[in-house]
Length: 149
Image 1: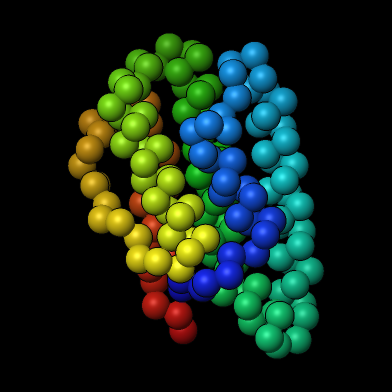
Image 2: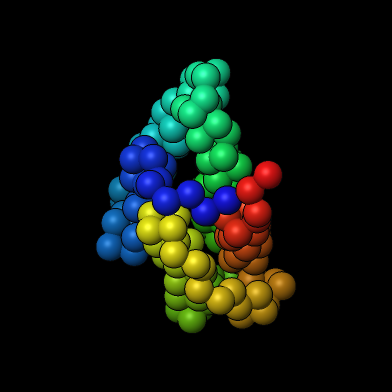
């Protein structure tokens, strides 16, 4: 499913995962609202494009699973933050770096069409607060490398 020429809206949503773009804790709520608003716009545009005749509709259809996977990653990130705010153990810097690296690799592969770097499925403890997010990143990776129909 790797399709070179990532649509700009989806590329922008993925670019927000760049560690330099992450907000300070005071800005996290407004950042999260903006991200969900941007993803809603991406979803709406893709839904509109799905109704178009080929090649636009077919191209949008090939990207639809990626759009859903990105939404699931954002949802898992929000859920992780809530769990930590309610007492879950804070992930270690190594755990954060592992997940952030996989997100960056996923975003880069989608932008460039290059192969994904090798995954590290067992880098986190199953009880780590990032475990669900890590699972969603791996699910997104599976969507990206799945063969096209």
